[in-house]
Image 1 (cartoon, rainbow, N blue to C red):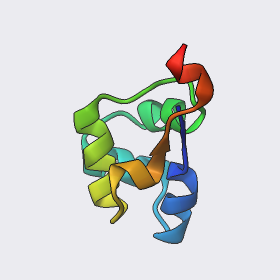
Image 2: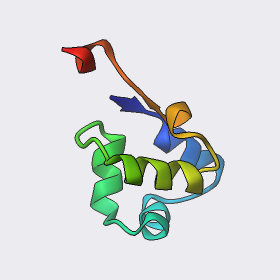
Image 3: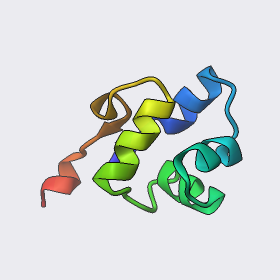
Image 4: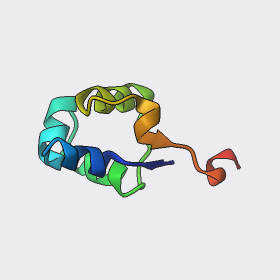
Amino acid sequence: MKNIIKVERARLNLTQAELAEKVKVARQTIIAIEADKFVPSTVLAFKIARVLNCKADDIFELEDSDWL
């Protein structure tokens, strides 16, 4: 699953640490999600979307490989 968290963070001038604090996770979690190394839970995805003033499906997108 790919995401545009980094782009949306930049739009709001939020650092990874600030986003992590707002959604109550470690900065390393945000780093891993942005690098497509970790898929967040549904709850975390919705929290991130809310902080970024977006819908979850605007931020996260399934890739063809996710269907395999």
